[in-house]
Length: 276
Image 1: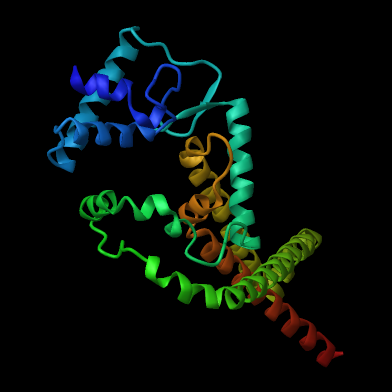
Image 2: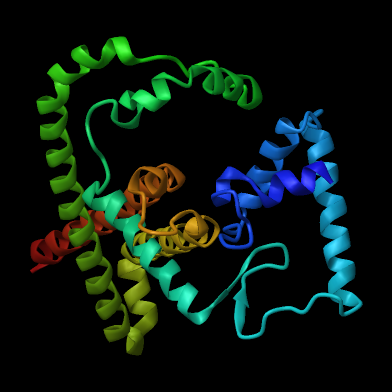
């Protein structure tokens, strides 16, 4: 009963879970917080076992008709959240923002950012607890480093600008290369064997680049699907960029293989001119 009351009046939902329903997977964090507040938190293993029990009860309620599934929703996997068409549109918007962060460095701000928040500096007890729960010893009070970091902010801004220009240039170039090779491939379908003998390195490099672009889209969309519930009012690019930490690396690999395709294209063109 105490745990139920703690959940229904949690500060995560402005003390009224009915008026402000839990957003998606926030429940997992709310439950941990309430277990801790009620002195019921024992270990993470027990929490997982409790989650398993709750999931089994929910599955049973759906099977016997006590609970009804919402119609007109899309669900990627059985154990993930379902969304309506309008909500999926929002997810697509978050996916676009993910690429904006990875390519244009949107949300990358030099300085200590939120670490300088006075509220955080006044709440180091909670941060110390987080260090224990998450097993991350690197959480620390960085307030003494603010003046030192401010001196480097102009330099960091220049580096961000340079990286952004490089990102945009390489992404445009890679898209152009992939498109060019696609047109060239379809134009050579009539004599496919001859085309592959001359262009197999170019072809497989371009296909690999396209594959990484596809992986990047799937990755960003998946991250958006699981994190969209966090962004109730607006997209927090700091959080989104953190969740999409692998996206720049995937796009980098796409660029590498696209440029490798261009390299072999240039060699092939030079060879053709030499024979002429």
